[in-house]
Amino acid sequence: MNDVGQEFRYKDFGDRVRQWRQAVQPPMTQRELADKIDVTSGFLAHVETGRTLPGVRTLVAISRALGVPLHDVLRAAGYLPPALEQRDDWLLEPEFRLFFSDDWPQLTDDERDLLRDFIRMLKTRIRRRQSQHWDM
Figure (cartoon, rainbow, N blue to C red):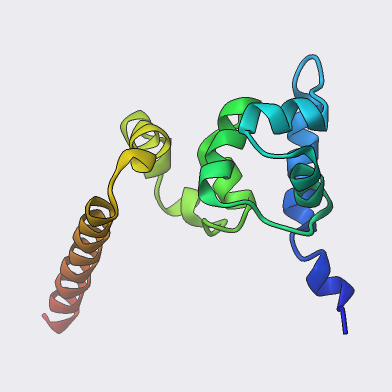
């Protein structure tokens, strides 16, 4: 049984990609965008109709090809919570944006794991600090 809600669960994201593509001057065709981001036009059609959600590498390519800030693309794709921008503007920092758009794909799996471990360690330190604050 094929549930239509499941089949088109990425429709909002697909609509955003179509809007971004058509907002480029001059507007870009699906084929042109597909060529720029190194996917087939059929795959891009599936993205725009909400049948599939591209991986992070393709999301980065979409961001670059359409001139849309990466954090906007990641947020539209559901990789970032909507409230993140209100809590913290770290994604607006040019150094972080450059790292994640340019350097992240170049990292080895071990280097990515190391960075993830470092972030987890920082989160643990923050939780401990907050816990100590409440204990006082």
